[in-house]
Length: 152
Image (cartoon, rainbow, N blue to C red; front, top):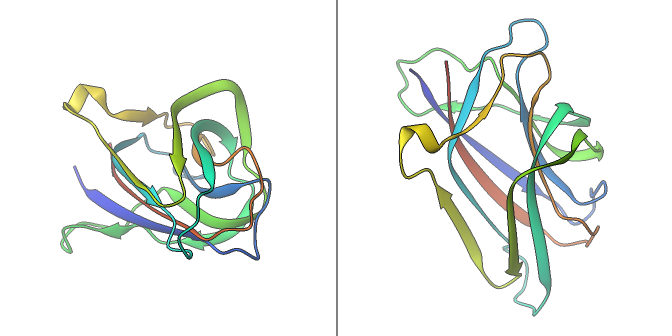
């Protein structure tokens, strides 16, 4: 099973309803994906701004800049998943399908790791299905995230 790192950055000038990044199964060659490590925070000037971050299931990636998942082992093939950042159109989120919800101050960084293989956050091998990371308010602040994932 190949493992990949996906680096996301939301710039202060390209904010679509708080979207940060998305990862979905490819439309033509879908594969099941599993997130096992998620990190996010802000590298903007320190400020006391509270944020909520939501990792939510989605059924369409929205309009965004493509991000290439990087194979952690360079001998592995390229990922089939489609990742994107700097959304101008938000992903199509599934109502009430929030799998991770974190309240965080802008000065803080957050990391979530699956404690066991059977605790990973999984998206199906269904075209354009996956996850989007977003904040419920559109604040013009730079946010960076990194997902580690694998495909089955």
